[in-house]
Length: 560
Ligand code: PRX
Figure 1 (cartoon, rainbow, N blue to C red):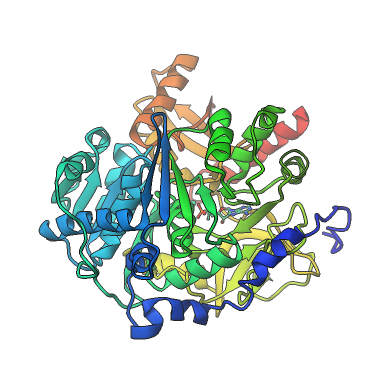
Figure 2: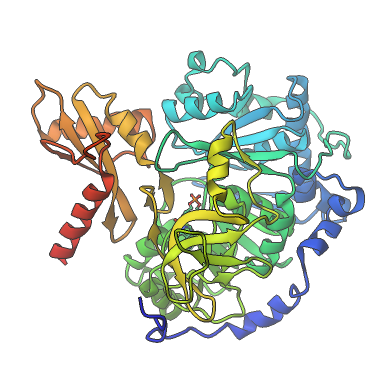
């Protein structure tokens, strides 16, 4: 690849009205962040205390902490009210025997209670395991079993998807409807806070790779330092901001940048339930005067496909927009710049990294097509197969010098997997392929493994294949990401049938719904192709997903 790859792209100059904002953060380092937190004073901390209670103690109790929006309207809570609620939940958790280090899962839709439940688990020193609301039985069972979760906070609707008999460690289920009915005053000072060490467990997110079941990525309380600093520098949060992150806390974006980072910086956050609907999203931004908005390329592309719908809404409050999770097309940046008068700032990171590592800071120019540059204090390297740094312009493995404050603490019960990220001395290997230009801008080029990225959600082909072959009609399955204009990729399954089954559209639909019902909607194949044979390696007979994927990419190229 030529090294002068970015010269044909028009840079979008920095938004200079933002520069003044940014200046106020410029000298704010990891060390400064520690001093703001109890970490810097006592060496101990608690992420839930730092996120909510600290603001009450510092005199901001009456500030609005959240607006919760659903079809019934908007409900708002102050920091004092959120603290009181987390105290109430924390008390109930303690009464149910929850102790430091226990794994407590939260399976709720995107409601205020979901955020409160997560924080209450953390407050008592337990490890929070947030589950995405669309997960079905097997996804839930696999996750809770893997780290032997002992308690679950859910509601009377979602509990129907929890196969309790198959989760032996699960001793207690608490329902938010029942907690709501309990009348307790929740002003407890700090006595419910369990002060922990920076290395103690905070939150566990399950995430997919190309092999095996999802892995439990465990983060420690020290990540708080990463969250508060990137919340200031990258999200550019200030006191007057109304901040909206569209991700569910079951995903790392929804916890780190939907909950921790904005609240550590005392922002008023927006929590919106329900699915994507362009009209509702624009209306919400107008009504609540959202100033900072963090979403994903698929959502931007869906809005872009709505033509001039945005003209019906007053979006003038928006001053800072960010994107994550999948490649952000230059056309989308241009569209937002022209039509919404905003720049979209791409950010790159992963569940394992616990926070932003490659970013477009608000005051810097944007190169459309690039994910940005290394966050100050972070060293990015593009490595060859020997772990040596490649020069600008050459594609290699995207790696980051370890450690940094948000880096995962471990992969639950799987030290080998954890070590596999660190095969080259001193580097964390992301599994992404990329190149850097002379100015340090990083350009994403794809994955080096078979992981699928659909609408920014990470899907492991193995998990989908395993589910497919549980269907009586399916003999073998190979699952790949098929390029898609709106979602980046969609899940496509190639299957062979067992003797006695005939290929038909009905059968394909039945198989699709089988995965949807048992695993989850986002991982169910949008396309199924029935084939006679699947390509396999000669020696071990492993299905060659790469060959299936190459076929799909080729078909796409012929069409366009
Ligand atoms: O392939 C990269 C892609 O998403 C992966 C991480 O997925 P996950 O752990 O689910 O975290 C998503 C959000 C933190 C990466 O290995 N990815 C993430 N950000 C970008 C991206 N691909 C292209 N551009 C990005 N900005």
